[in-house]
Amino acid sequence: MPTFITIGYGDPDDYDRTDPAVRDAAHANDAALLARGARMGVAGTPVQVRNHDGAGTGTTEGPFLRSDLPVAGFAVVEAASLDEAVALVAGSPCAVAHGVIEVWPLDETPTAG
Image (cartoon, rainbow, N blue to C red; front, side):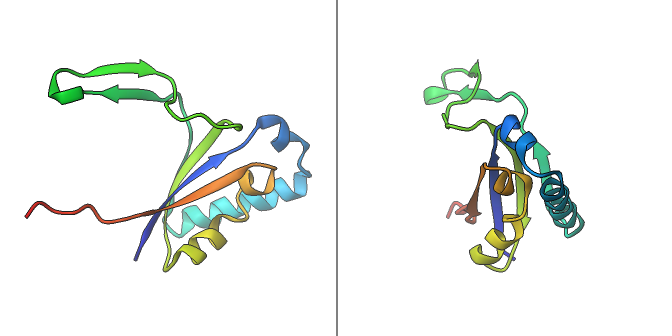
């Protein structure tokens, strides 16, 4: 079954102003995703990793990408299609609390031939 990476973006203030019943339904949606095997988590502080030309690893704290909203969390979901993956996460907290969720198809890694 195809795998999708999801990235949720959301502002805590927007979450707080969302009707509690809507938030409860969104958390129930996430519980259902977990029950069907999704891997989910809240975003921690990122570290950028570089090893240009294999000359040595360097790290920088903080995100490389920038967004109008902070990254709130990630999930790995399996679905038969992109449309199904979108439907699965459409009820999640970031989607309903004035944020956004990106759904990225995870293509297979090419093998060395």
